[in-house]
Length: 136
Image (cartoon, rainbow, N blue to C red; front, side):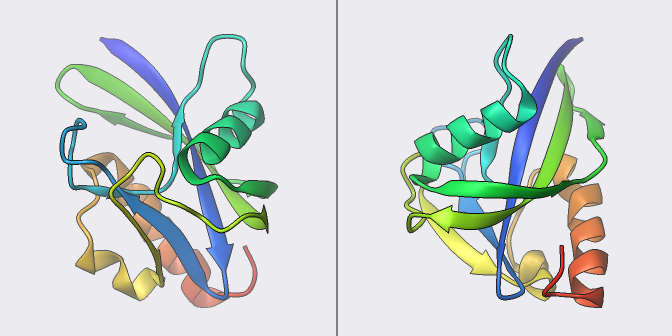
């Protein structure tokens, strides 16, 4: 089974998290996700995150903390998600590689369709941010 490492930026501001909607022609088109992307060979996770957020959103972030990695098996691929809480340092997020962006609270996650690999992460974020929205 093919394995893919995906580094995710949980960009937080005022108790909300930035999400992006995949383009309709992309795999899982129309689904919402946390910004990030595939880790390239020889690239550290933090380098990947910085590159992806610059390419996809035209922003710079500061990594605050890492969460445990999450593995999910789709029919043809195993995905390993590596989420990082981030603070926005520079730029206004722009949907350069997606249809739309939204700042949402954890209570609003259910209004958006996320890929199944995100279920564990959504539950964790809901618990963690609901307990203390200002701290991540």
